Length: 168
Image 1: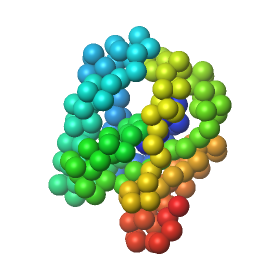
Image 2: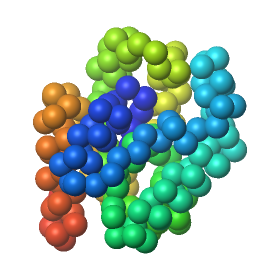
Image 3: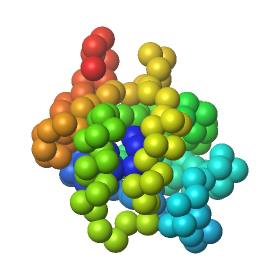
Image 4: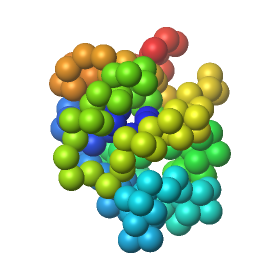
């Protein structure tokens, strides 16, 4: 989870590789209407996100039911979104890719061919509700190389799964 430009796609694929599970990019679950809105610079509403979150939750539930596990990159900026995803699959663990606005803006400026314009970054940070203490998950700084972020995330997720008291 994290704001646009935090590295969810890059780190998500690397994390899935390290954990030996499938990877899915949440952007592929968006409807054409949602993509058109974001491309036009219009932030999505909670109503827009509902079917998208349900599709992601269904993917996670299906993977869990098969005992296969998986990693899906999803902004999941608000607690309510994460709660909706957990309602579909209670065993979800979130990895919050955290970085300051300047770092993320610089990364977004370097991206090509992405429908999410940098102009929406402020709305993303405004909506972001970091993981609460009662949510299964870990926070990882993205101020280092993506491979290092994935390594740290994998280690923290494994510690959390093993029941370590302090996976942060």
